[in-house]
Length: 277
Image 1 (cartoon, rainbow, N blue to C red):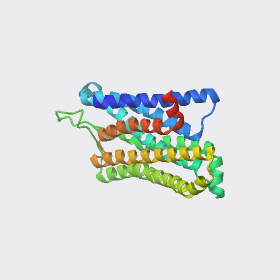
Image 2: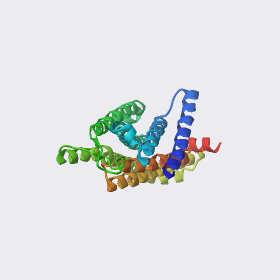
Image 3: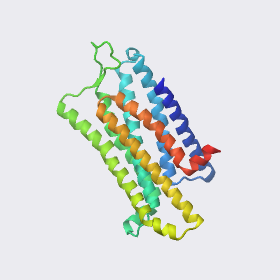
Image 4: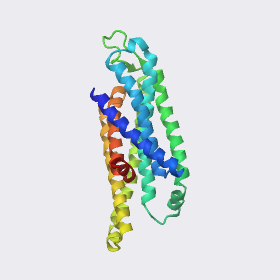
């Protein structure tokens, strides 16, 4: 009941985000780079919650005898795929926001900033390919413990060799946890350093536009810090429990998809204004 309640709140929040930006795109026929990334993040959260509802029902009420191993093979693969995709989209959101806020005179940075809208497409496609490649092998490893009294809850991921198991889950942690954490931290630290260095200039030249721009940038920085803290808490918990148990990933991502939607709505000006209306 608690899990379903949390997912219900998360589904409402993510559906609201998708609806707001869909209407925005319908009106202006375009979305900014960070708006597109937020929309995709919310959309994948909705897809995850749809799969998680089925998984939780079968898992808790022990209906796996009716569906067999194939059900877990499909749902576990999708759960890991959507979970890791969400984390990567969050990391790319931090990167896109940093590119929008930070202003430096480096030529490479300026060129990348001009082509960020085009680069977002490659970020999305590359993320989907990467997450699919690391989650698909799970489908071939799901096994039931047939002699167990709780067969639906005690299934496991089988590997022929322990070395292969450590190599796979080590690669999974590296490609879908640590690398994107580095990207998040570098992007957010870049924003914070830029805002601190330019805070004096903003305070000297106090105008309505500069003040509102500074407030918007500060709100974005707070949003990213909250998302990073949430990511560290959820992934750290899943890793501490057991990376090979999909239930740990499922539970933590339920919290992640719900809380992240609340953070995005409360800290994004356009979403917050639409919610208040």
